[in-house]
Length: 406
Image (cartoon, rainbow, N blue to C red; front, side):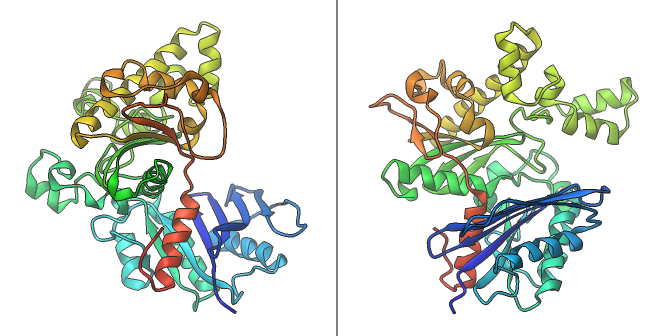
């Protein structure tokens, strides 16, 4: 029996998201989520997508990631798709930070695990949870290949002049301070899918990708290769996000320490959890912000305007970086679903070749689509991201031995 299935795991600090895919046709066989791990009563929601199976929910104490993965394996086994299935080729794990070493999907062994662990200081919220997921899956089936797919990998092609910060080189090198970028799995998928939407190969097009979710990032992709991205050493830099400030004068940190008496941890919490949209208006849900704007709420209007202003700045900057832009692609929760954000971002950039057709922009759908007027110099697209499929493809191409991803 040919092993063509990949289980994709995304292990967070208190959650595990998973999908089981068959790589013969990229179909999904099951999806699920375990949340509130270690918080008393946890919840597992499992949805088989084949046969007559119905969505199942379990509410019970799940103390740690080991227990969570065992519960996931049990649900999959109920559907005949357990971790011991001969049809399962590998488990693909999302790992947020791979530093400079990991430039492509990697089969996990002890040296790889040690390097992921060594990178915890630059990804303290994510890499520990990613490690727990890998080690738990390894223990459950030691013979099954575990593949790490890194959020930073797509951005390791940044030229040195884009990756370097203008600080003392010795200090930067000794503490690994440079631009790494994140959301790379999404940027890779969306840039290639945009090329296909245009009827071209990835190496023929230049694309600006705007991944706009609660976390948000932009990338400039030249001929399929990332040459610039907005997030930096951490996911805090760049665009205005749901709860993160994005770009800010570094001296604000010193000012708050000296004048407000705030500790480093307090400032960290401020910039990561109490800034961005929620800091500006108290909401980080773009739907609620738009509802408030329609009711005349000034704080919501300001938050929206700050958000869009930052987007425009990055689009303009990346036009300059790329020289020629074939498409701007909106993706992720806000990018895919907020017509006002897309319209406002393109508005006023007609001189750069960008325009949005109001009727096309208003259409909602699950498929990639163009929302720019016919004949526009720069295509504006909505391209739903699919990070799980991208992880599964990269994982399967590695363990199947062809060394490529599609």
